[in-house]
Image (cartoon, rainbow, N blue to C red; front, side, top):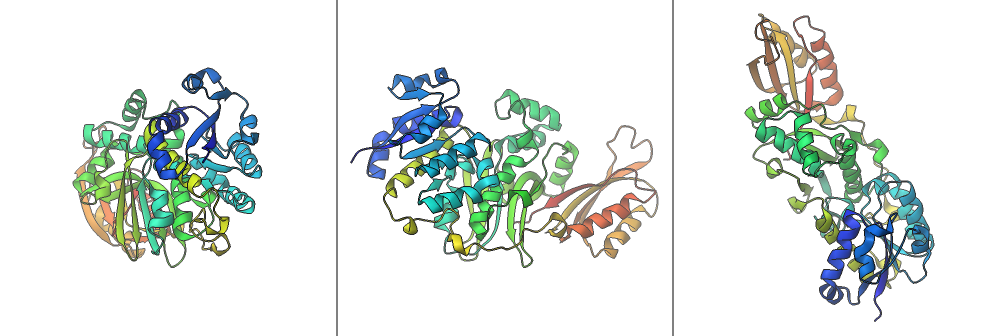
Amino acid sequence: MEPIKVGLLGFGTVGSGTFTVLRRNQEEIKRRAGRGIEIARVAVRTPSKAQAAKDEGIAVTDDFGAVVDDPSIGIVCEMIGGTGVARELVLRAIANGKHVVTANKALLAVHGTEIFEAARAKGVMVAFEAAVAGGIPIIKALREGLTANRIEYIAGIINGTTNYILSEMRDRGLDFATALKAAQELGYAEADPTFDIEGVDAAHKVTIMSAIAFGVPVQFDRAYVEGISKLSAIDIRYAEELGYRIKLLGIARRTEKGIELRTHPTLVPEKRLLANVEGAMNAVVVHGDAVGTTLYYGKGAGAEPTASAVVADLVDVTRLHTADPEHRVPHLAFQPDSLSNTPILPIDDVTSGYYLRLRVADVTGVLANITRILADKGISIDALLQKESEEVGGANKGETDIILITHETVEKNANAAIAEIEALSTVVSRVTKLRMASLN
């Protein structure tokens, strides 16, 4: 059988990695796919950057449209990123009857509903394993391996940059700015790290996973997103003293009222496996009613780990290239006409335990007033620390830090209590609030 021809859009880290893995393992891949998979054309803004492809006799161009429109191309592999040009090219490829493989989480989180509907109408596949957690096959697990389960929650460390920064802050006692600089020097963080450190990248990924897990449309615009740029090293240390580690988690959880879809710094009990994922590694915990808790761990970025997922998608598409579209696994695991309209809960309606840190005047009755306010809002305390203030001059001013861990409550109740606490004359700082995840 003739090899299926692939048009590669982009030849950066992931595109060049895909080329390398496909070339190195071509015989093994052919045995698995049942036919060869051949990169026939590469489109890149600066053709000289794809010299490795030219050296193999592959046609290289700066005309992306020419590749998408080429009738000999069966699969378009989109590796350029972004949500503008990438969206236009992907929809154009679909309109031309071509299958699409993409690693573009932002594109699918924002425009996934439109893209999947266009693909369904045209009878082609859109494969996106590489869009979430790099080389970890979490999409495959959610779409197929766990299909017998009612998924209860997903919690993932799905951004290696932020996990590296948090590991450095904990292990070396660095402040955020210093840890970020170290991450940039090692190539873990971009020159403009905003999408990573403000939680947007992780939110894109958990949005995609939530759609597959719960059978709902892709709804990034309803996700709550909070990053780590305002996180203090002192909170990482206090959390450790209380038996927790702070991770940036993407969380999707099914509740009676709707679906929680949120990304934020989170206290995780140190005994949980997820709390011990360090450096730039990724990990995703999925809890299903039948299988219980499962953990998926590995490299979430990089040329070849991500290429591993891209090539796996190319193999899947090649195997199913001629299959009846009705017999393929649906893009979001559930049949398109069976997606539900379960609401995504606003953050005010989310239930969580909380870590609260505040600086107070070291006088009689302060703690009693704070606990009274919490009790009035139905919030009980699970743990408490009182520490000498580490603010400059704090100890000399007769001030102390109070750190509280609360039992679970609704976010709006926690916010109401915090507002009253901050209004106390004996409270001399804003309250630092971090959410918790027990992962039970």
